[in-house]
Amino acid sequence: MTESGNELVQLCLNGNAAAQKRLYDLFAANMNGVCYRYARNGEDARDILQEGFIKVFTRLKSFKGDGPLEAWIRRIMVNTALDFIKARNKHLFEDEGKIDVKNHATNPEVMNKLQSEDLVNCISKLPDGFKAVFNLYAIEGYSHKEVSEQLNITESTSRSQYNRARTKLEQIIQQRFKVKEYERV
Image 1 (cartoon, rainbow, N blue to C red):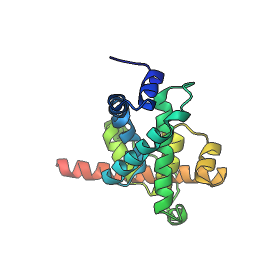
Image 2 (tube, rainbow, N blue to C red):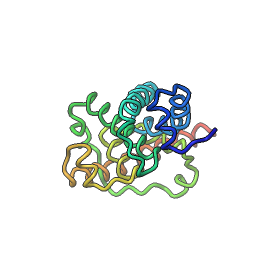
Image 3 (tube, one colour):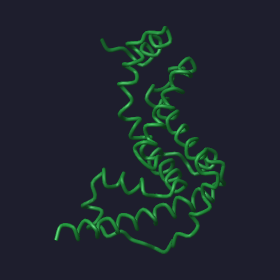
């Protein structure tokens, strides 16, 4: 039986264990991907996912149903990931000022050969602060104002961290591509 998001939420709120499992099964894979983008590794991603679903189930009564359930869950997962990063890194942006922000242009040939899983892997190599800003702005679609509010930084810091993250990401992609080409020879 398939139910709408609102019906599934109501079943979960009524203590229906099968509905709670359906909700988890329905969203866990996508939300794990969200968590992984913010995490350093798979173990951290699983910890964020678990903590995020605990929050989902404890806050389910606050779901108003005026938007998609998946979007509501995604916001909880992103906020949980940001809390995780902030708790681990008291000085989130301090070490990231040393990135050379010259105009780097990634070779278009490299970009054409890049697979989505390669890009996710490369993003995971970014320092945590860069990764948080990059994910929030470029992937989640937040504005720099919203990013600044989420991370408790200024809008100009969000912009500069995003530009530095892009530069660092380009460097990581270039380095990874060279290694792959070397391995193929």
